[in-house]
Image (cartoon, helix red, strand yellow):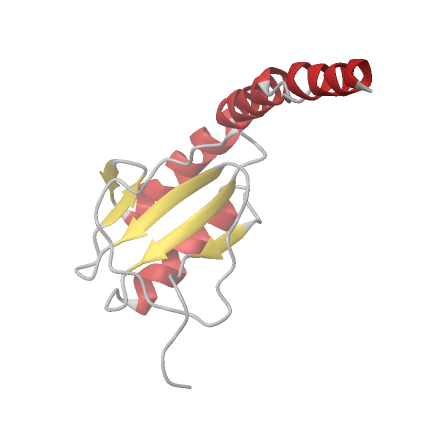
Length: 141
């Protein structure tokens, strides 16, 4: 009986540990994979106070951002441009990255006419995938 008891105690102490090294390697490899494959979208070059929308959707993939300020100022990326130069800038950027969508981020007080002209210029530049940026959910109803 004593021999049996010693062998059971010996088994309990030697094989009771769980090796966590393979799990740690796996988790770190996943972390590296997700960091490398993450897509970082450039932020707008100028600060824009966007309107809110209850139906706002997040767009995936590359985007070309056009910002419209309340005073009518237009920025394509980080460059301030005139409304007549939007088409040329979009044609150039669209030629470099044809799969990118265009997002127009207009401030709430931006002139509607400027917004319409910018969208027209983008479509004339050959891009049909145009979205208007909004942030969060609208309060009220």
